[in-house]
Length: 334
Image (cartoon, rainbow, N blue to C red; front, side, top):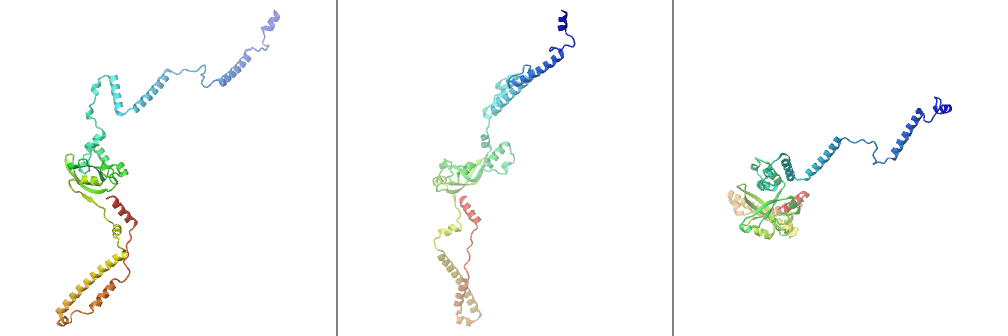
């Protein structure tokens, strides 16, 4: 027993594997190894054993944010009227009331087209722009976007001598309607178009007004326009080049005609001068009356003609490129 006590009783000098100091050092190393191995073997979606649970306020805040995003997306997807109806419904739901109190009359509702019809002007004057409201400003902006060179006509009631005119829009200008196509709104012919000037008398805002408008029509629509009264037809002015093309005579014949005209006018001037000199000589002395006219007049006359046509022919002025373009566009816009 004594031997057993000595062996297992242990003294301070006995080195054991289960001693407190060395045993604690090994357990810490094992713990570090174990943690390292767990971190290596942990899956990315696997939660740790000691994960902390978020507070309830965090969850409520996140839920409120998500609900606010959904409501905002829903409101953006609605139009103005549906959004108004939703707000009215929410107000009645939370604060009480009746839907009849918020019901509106559709008769008082106006669209942009209704505002334009009420405040439109065929021609805006300075007097019309004095007391401007938002309705008039909207109509004025629409008027400024119109093209006021040619008109579009409504000739459906031509037998009653009633016509309707309006200005062209941008799409009609691009397509050529009213200039390269017939200006009647139900006609699309492009051949034989003529330009007409019409004194358009109309009643606007309870006031009679007149406006001189221009439009291009095909022969059939031109007949409808002139059914009661003959309108003024606008014709393009012929340029010098067109006149020369129409005149098919050669240039030499025309020059000869011009020379004959000038020589005849020149001879008439000399004859008139001769007569005037003879009358003066008759009044001064009787001897000059016996002699008659001076025989030296004829050679003087021939000499003057030769002097008149002596020298180079007058130079013909050539037109510049800008003048040719101006003449071309004058023909287009008439």
